[in-house]
Picture 1 (cartoon, rainbow, N blue to C red):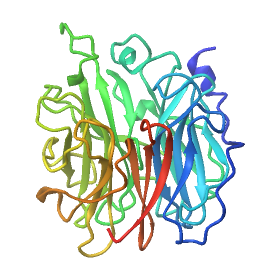
Picture 2 (picture 1 turned 135 degrees about the vertical axis):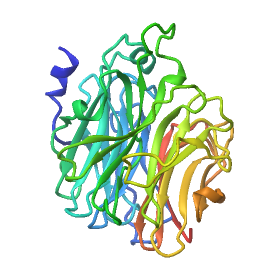
Picture 3 (picture 1 turned 180 degrees about the horizontal axis):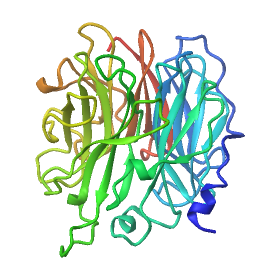
Length: 388
């Protein structure tokens, strides 16, 4: 059975047992919880967290359920757990997009502020394919899908293929987010959904490159102005000169309405491992190309951004605080990213990797993050933070 045939078998949603939720806690009384533990619930590993809070106040914690282990290839589902008490306890595991032997991943959820619908954009590829093989053109390029939930994340529509609108023909690898996408809430582009993403391009004709070289990575934005029904490309970073290689990306809307993009720099020759850029037109173009963010000393890893609401509220960023090892998950803050970031809180010195920031309520910010004792992929924890 081909990959495209298997995608037609993906169920809209179904429930599978996981470990029992922890004892109920009064809303706002807990500090942390653990929605995913590797080896439980039918999956060898859980990775790639993404989180949003619905208009009803439900926290949705998405992840990749990896049946074969922590590796990026194989039989991988996109899974979800819901919390109605601010991330203190979690409901049963839901399979939102089933791999059926193939790979479903890079969840990038966003809540449409006009309708309350949860929009989930993600990617898929053949289960036997690797990122390196796809970049070399040895396997079909990644596909891009969208799903909707109109009942607070209880059920999702079947994945709908939007690759024709979301990618250029010469692209091979493709990664939405991972982590939450963005709904613009002010300015002339209010209501627009913005999915920060990255891709790899095929080498130009006559090049000796295979396409696996890091300089073929680039960032882009995927835009929808109708609640996720139709999609189009916004800016496309296509320099491919090897100086800055924008990779996994996150976005936030700044108080003045501009959109801030932060990306992992994958093997670029510029100093540091974190780059950023700003768009003044809702993600259509960048005011300047991606450039290093020297105040974020982090390893080569995904990171998350979140703009807190209110006058003078900070822009937050989360990632391991290495700068060479994936450990010590830290949240930084900035009043203006042009002026740089300063550390606000380190959650723990333990191993840690990918993370996603989410606004839980008016006083609380949540961090959904990979962590463990011996390594960073033992569990996905949730930490509630106040006073940021």
